[in-house]
Amino acid sequence: MPHPSDVHVNAPLTDLSLAVIQSETAFIAAQVFPTVPVKKQGDRYYVYNAGDLLADDAKLRAPGTKAAEGDYRVDNTPAYYCPIYAKRRAISEQERDNADAVINTDRDAMEFVTRSLLIRRERLWVAGYFGTGIWTNNKVGGAKGGGKDFIQWSDYTNSHPITDVGAYMEVVRLGTGFRPNTLVLTPDVMEQLRNHPDVLDRFKYTQKGVITADLLAAVMGVERVVSAEAVYNSSLDPDNPVITNIAGTKAVLLVYAAKAPGIRVASGGYTFVWTGLTGVNSAGFRIKKYRVDELSSDIVEGEVAFAPKIVAPSLGCFLSDAIA
Image 1 (cartoon, rainbow, N blue to C red):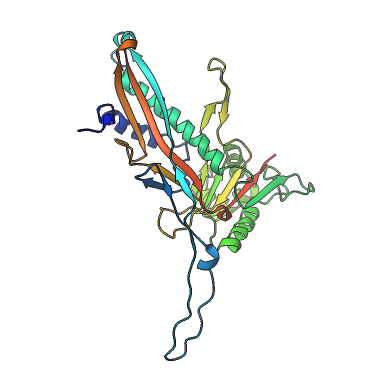
Image 2: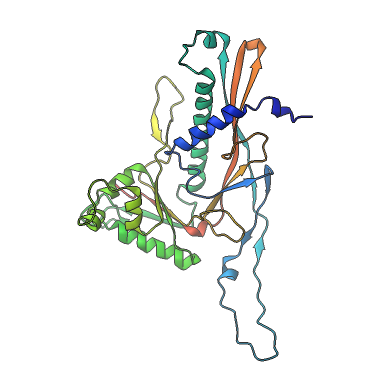
């Protein structure tokens, strides 16, 4: 017998939703930290003790003697749980029958619910990773002479963002053994850095045109720079929308993120995605389509189950008020 949900999951629409997800590059929730596909909705994961892994306890070995004994501890108490987030849209018979030939009501509904789920995922990513008090290291920018950790990078005369990022990379490295490889910026900070004299000076003889994210990454000494540009309507009134940057403003996350998940692979965070859910695509999304006769409508419903988790808070440094 088929699983009850098999009769509802619409494979073509689910496949099309993947194309929508991949095209929405402003959403960074799946770009920064590795995605861990899991077969169970909830379970435990393991965290290795960094002090054990970085210990210098190898000793000289005399002939005929045992090697120095060593071990590492594993914490198996951390757990994840991937709740299901869902959104649906009804397509009435009247809407479908009145639609022009160029309008694909099913596809439009699929894109609508997929984008809504992307917004939900992005906001949960920001809440879990992108803020003060989340990471071990937190720095605050301010005006020159204001007693803050660094001079705000919008002060083109007195600030030195390349030096600041290098210094905070060293803070993380000396605390963990890992140098941060990823810089996540809100768009306003990105724009200030692209026009900062310290950055432009590095390229004045070699590059022309716009300073891209890849060029900025090379200057800052990280593997990648990611601009968190996704927006949403923060107003409860859809007729009077307030379009807001999901990641906020003036903020920076400097973090070590693994390229791929793995046993004993360090990473500031992981995103657990329940791929054991029947009919999901590789991003963990699925689209259902079913009939509700009492509404005289077809329902297009999107679902995703995921859990963003901080794994090693010491691998990150969050900078607030990076610009004025």
